[in-house]
Amino acid sequence: MSTSNPEDKILALRRNLAVQREECLRLAPEEALERILDSPQPAALVHAFPEEDLHILIREIGPEDALPLIALASNKQREYLLDQEIWQRDRIDLTATVRWLDRLLRADPSPTRSIQWLAKDKLDVIELFLSRAIEVQMRENDQDPSVFGADFFSYDNVFYIRIISPPTAPKEEEPSPGGVSLHDTVKKLLDHLADSDYVRLQGILLEAAHVLPAESEEEAYRLRTVRLAEKGFLPFEEAVGLYQPLNDQVFPHKARRQHRLAPSQPDFFPLVPTTVLPEGNLFTRALASLDDREQRQALQEEFATLCNRIIVADRQKIDRREALATVVAKASGYIHIGLQKRLPQNASGASGTTAAREIGRYHLEGLFRLGFGEAARLKRAAEEWVHQSWFAGQGLSLTFWGETWLGVIGGLLLKRPLFFDNYRAGRMYREFACQEDIDWSRRQLLQVQRFDGLLGRIDPTLNASAKAAFLTYKNLLLSLWARSDLGLSKEIRPIATEAFQPFFEALFQPGATPTDKGHKISDAKRSQFLEWLATRTDEAATALSASIGSSLESLFVELEENYGRVSADRIDPRYVSHFLLAH
Image 1 (cartoon, one colour):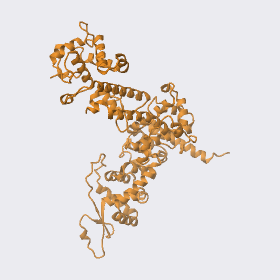
Image 2 (cartoon, helix red, strand yellow; image 1 turned 135 degrees about the horizontal axis):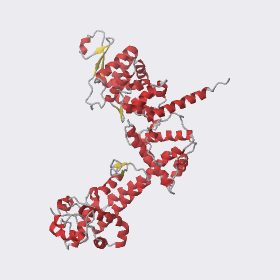
Image 3 (cartoon, helix red, strand yellow; image 1 turned 90 degrees about the vertical axis):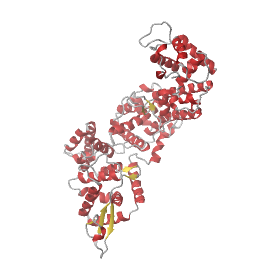
Image 4 (tube, rainbow, N blue to C red; image 1 turned 120 degrees about the horizontal axis):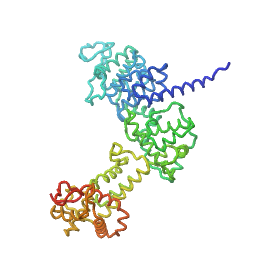
C-alpha cells in the first residue's frame, strides 16, 4: 500500500485554499465573510489570502464588521494592514493609529497575542505612538506623588503617566463603537502591556520618554518602505520611473524577458486586480487564452506588482475594489496600446493567443511604458504648441477653443495625460484605453493647431472689450465673416442686432421648407465662407477643405441645430453664442 508524497499533499491543500479564496473574492463582501467563517479551517483560509487581497476584502466588508478576519489574520497580514492604514505618505497619522490599535485590541477575545506582537515586532511604532500620546515622569524616592497632579497615574509608584490630549485632527471618518477616544485606547494599550509583561512596559516607557520622534519616524518609514517594496510598492522616486516612455527602437532591448515565466509564489498572489480587468482588452484576452497554469499565475503576479507601482507613482490610497479598478484600467489600457503597437496588423482584432505570445516575450512594464509613450508624445506636442500658439500670445485662455477642444487640450496638459471622454462613460476624463483614443485626441489637437495657425495669419486685433466678451474661435471667425459680408470694418466689435438680421436671413436657404431641425444653411453660403477664409489666410480653398473641412461642416451643422428654427426678426443677442452681437 503506497502513501502519497507529503509535498503533493501540501500542494493539493494550497491549491484547494487558492480555489476557495478565489470563490470568496467573487462573492459580495458580507457573503465572503460568512463563507470564510463557516469554513472548516477559517484561519488557514484567511492565511491563504495575500496581504493585498485581504486588505481590500476587510475594507469592503467594513473594518468593524471584519474584526473576526483581523483576529484570524497572520502577523504579516496585520503588519500590512498597519503599513497601509496608519501612514500618510511619510508620516504616521495619529488618528488612524488610534483607530487601528483599538481594532487590533478588540479583535481577539483575549488581546494577549496582539499585545505580544505589538511589543515585539512593532515596537518602533508603539514607542513612536506613545511618545506623542503620553507624558512620562519618574518619581524620586523622597518625592510625593501628589506633585504630578491628578492627570497622572502609575502602575508601580515609579513611572507616572499622563495621557496627552490629541492635537487638532480631522474628525474620524469611521469612529469606533461607543466613540472610543485616544485616551481610552492608550489606557487600554498600557493596561494590557502591564498585565502581559511589566518589565517590557517599563522599557517601552523609558524609550517613549526619550525617543527622538523625527529620527524614529524616519527609521520606521524606511522599514515600511522595504517591506512594501517586495510587493511592488517602490519608493515614490523609483515608482515614477514607470512613466519614462519607451519608443519602438529601444523597446525590444529594454523589455525582452531573460528568463522563462514562472510565479515566485505559486497559488499565492493577489487575485483582486485580475477580477476587475476590463473586458475586450488585449491583455485580458491574452490571459484568458493561456493554458499554462504557471505562466498565467506569473503574469497575474507581475500585473499586480505593476498596479502596486502605479498606486505609489500616482500617490493613491486604495481601500476599495472600485478604486483599484481605476488603476487596473490604466495598467491594462496602456498594455493594450503597447500590444497594438507591437501587433499593427488588425491589432484591435488580434487574437488572445497572438497577444499572449507578446506578453510572454516582453515584460508588462515594458509594454506599459511603450503604450504610455504614445500619450506622453501627444502631451509633449500639446505643450510645445501652446507655448508658441497664437491664442496664448493674445492672452486668451483654453476656453477660447470651446468645450470639446478645451477638454482635449486640458486633458493632455495634465501631469499625467488623460482622455477627454465627456461623460460618455460617466466621467469627464479617463485613462487612455486604446490606440483609437490616442488617434482621436491627436486629430483633435491637429485641428486646433490648424485653426490657431489660420487665426494667426488673419491676425485680428483683439481689443480689451473683445477679450472681456466670451470669445471663442467659433464666434470670432463667424463674426469676422459676418462683418466682411455686411461691409463693416475688420475690427472685432459686436454687431448691432438690426444690422446682423440681413446676414442671418441670407445664411439659411431662402424660401426652403424647414426640416424637423429647421432651415438648412445653403451650399452657396458654405462655399462663400470657405472662399472668404481662403482669401484672408492666403491658402487655397481646396487645401482648407481637405484639412479642416470636417470641422467646418460640424460648425455649420451646429448653427443649423441652434438657429435653424429662429426667425431673423426674433434674434435675441443674449442667446446667440456663435456671433458677437451687441446687447
